[in-house]
Image (cartoon, rainbow, N blue to C red):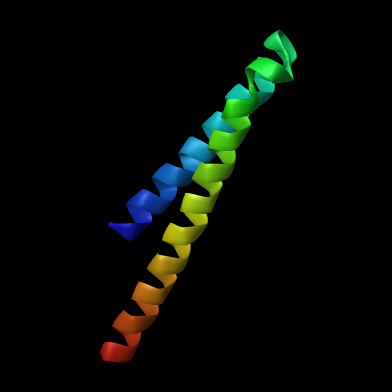
Length: 64
């Protein structure tokens, strides 16, 4: 479950970054800054989920 959420946040972050760069080129930074913020939030969520998964996997290995 953690791995799926981790990958989902990674995909969201990558897509948001692509959209942000495209919007910046087409419309300018003033119309695309929120995509950069969303990219940052998605990257933070990816990092949190990754750390949770690693901690969960370590606890499973210690418990066995």
